[in-house]
Each structure stands twice: as C-alpha cells, then as structure tokens.
Length: 367
Image (cartoon, rainbow, N blue to C red; front, side, top):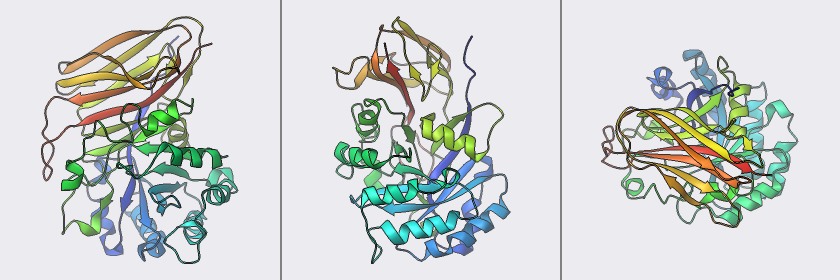
C-alpha cells in the first residue's frame, strides 16, 4: 500500500523588517503566497529589541499566516545562520537571551558553538528552535564548520541549509552560478550531511529587507525564492511544520513552475530512510508548468563513491511527467531531485537567469 502523499506548505524563514511602521507593507500580498514566514532580524541592530511588538502586530494583521520570531545569528565561525523559535509565551525572551549570550557582534557575549547549542538544547522541547545555515556563498561555510555544529548538536536543532542565495536581484548574486552554489551543488554542503545518513532540509529564502526596498527593489517573500515543507494532508499547525523541517521533507523553489506530486524509493519519501536488501524502485511524478531543460537525480548509491549526478532524464516537456529508476540492492547513500526550467525569464526587477527546483534527500541504508 502506498504511503500517503505530502501536502506542501509554502514559506520563507529568512526575512527582515527593521522599521515597525513597515509591518503592514511587509505583509502586503503575503497571505496569497505563503503559509508561514519568520522574522529574523540581526542581534546588533535595534530592530531585534522591537521584534516582539512587530511580530504581535503582524500576527494581528494577518492571522492566517504562521509567523515565527527568530534571529539571524552572527555565528562564532563567521557565517550567518537563522534561529526560528516556535510560538510560545517566552519566544522573544529566548531570542533576546540567546543573542546577548552567543552572538559574536554583541559586546560581552561568549560566541562558542558547543555552549550555544547546549543552551538551546536545555530549553523545553516545545520551545527549542530550528537552526538553518544561511547563504553559504563560496568561502563562508565549509564541511568542517558543519561537522563542528553537528557534533555539538545533541537535540536535533540543525535542520538544514539554504540551497540558493537570497537578495535575488543583486548583481553579485546574479553573478553566482546556482548549479555550483555550495549549499546544494552535487557533492556540496548538503550532500556532506546526507552522506552521513542524516536528514537535512534544503531551503530557498528571499532574505527580504522591507526597509531597503527604496534603495534596491527585490522580490518579496514567496514571489521567487521560497521553501516548500511537506506535511500530512489536512495539517498545517506549527508542530507539523517543524517536524517536517527537522525531518528534511522540503523543496527549495525559484518560481512557481513545478509541482512535485510524488518522489519516493518504494515507500520511502523525502526525509525517510529506505532500507532493503532487495532492489528498489524510484518513482517520480511531477507537473511542469513549462518545459524543463533537465531533470536530474543527485546522490550516491555507495558510500565508496562521492556524491554526484546519478542520472539525468534530460529535457522534459511541460505537463505531467512520470519517471522511474531502479535502485541497486543494498544501496547506501541518498538520492535527491534537481530540475531546471528551460526559459531564463525571471520576474521584474530581476534579470534573466537559471531557475531551479531542488528537493531534499531520501536516505538509503541498504541492509
């Protein structure tokens, strides 16, 4: 009997609003695009001290949106990461306390990785945040950095990584090659985690700054980069969402031109572990709103081989796409999906460029 299909919730867990007067403008159009979002201001800016008030106002203005309070953490190792806290009476207390204690740009803090993650793990389980690696541009994060956080993480806090860069209309970002971007490149940072047999979510975020739109217009949350999290049908509360993100049941999408209907190895879906001594069968079903330049599978069937392109189905026409692939008996590693749109057009005010759709991984533990 087939496992139930996932229901996709759309969201963005990396956004900023540093002016309380722009709360309504931040939400404009969001209700029609997203199911959830997180406000993740920086610790070194006054906006973090006003975030509780801003989040409360936004929740009142758009109650149908799951809105979370968080922090863009200036980490001890130099890069950025997002902490997203579940709703609770103490959510803003946790944000502030963590920033004061462990953000490297706050005077008097102790920016040490083990101590920071131990602090978070000591919170009640229902109040522990999700931790995501932000914009891992070349040179900012490394496999050694990830291993440091994974070793220190005893509570399953580190849940994923951004697969593509935010600030989608900036010239420096447009100059980056999304196919070799370290987060989701074949053999990149996400694959480093998957190769260890750990679920890991791939994200796409706008890194939207509503207060900077007069200086440089950018896509608002959900217009282009966005995250899709797979939850059981009929469920959309934050515990279901957080469970999906911790389990790696996500897709990172640039635009709205592809719908993933089914992706599994036998009955193992995204975030699951397939374990069998027999041959398996990978099943893929999607609806493409336009022609695809390529449809690829990335991963490894043996840990003796480095993660790489496993198979390309090649160009695909718009419409319903059904594909399958045998999985070797006792395969060990993972498999994930990458699709490229054939057209290069992006919404205004962006320039032409690749548009990707990426899934997180199905883990393979052949016995």
